[in-house]
Length: 337
Image (tube, rainbow, N blue to C red; front, side):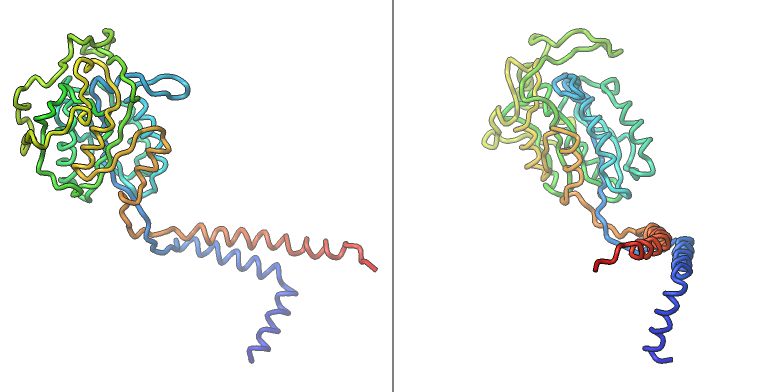
């Protein structure tokens, strides 16, 4: 049979049995779904270890949520809860906490879509009662977080959430430096808190409020004349000639019992470690930072093709009714003279 004859036969068969052809096409498309078709595409996914600062300054209520003041830690947790929904399936997230001079990994990153409930539940239970010390040595904690991430499989990025307040405050002449290779670990420092200082709530070991910390109860300057003790392996002190000025370190002698976001200091740490910085202004801003191209991992992912064939079957079934209706409508239209 010649091609012209075949085309003529197909056209005639379509005119006589259009509904049957549409039903056969829909049945074939549905049958294809049973074969679980799919194809490989390269998609960006994101693997993060999120370390939350749980020191007492994170209890300062200078953030707003639903029109009400909330603590920095609560605000950060809600933003992270919302951001989990913005991460594409296949991405992984693990939680950690920071207090004193080190970070502690709660669990390694797990896939977000399959473990969303577990991630949200564990996040909800992270609070200041988990802290084992009142100190908050940010630079050491960041170094500790980097060391943890470096040992994990898959090279996840570090997301360090903090207000940046060192307690005790740093000396401009002596502050910890480490041998970390800048940029070796991808990551992000997330600054949370208002730029205006606020009193720091004080609580007893059971978490009951005891008012606010007073100036005479808080170290107002670095109490170590030649720097702090080497509590972290590989730690060394800056030289006087390389010392950063006090404003860059966020130090506020005489007002260390008040707390504000130490943004310049966090940006300084970010530059030194090759990490990005974002201020936590909203859940949208955090989600955008967590899905930034710099933190993406292009990964071959098998895409489920059943949706395409199911939509094709639906379209063919709808066409079975649309085509006759269109012909009847054209037949009923008045003929213009």
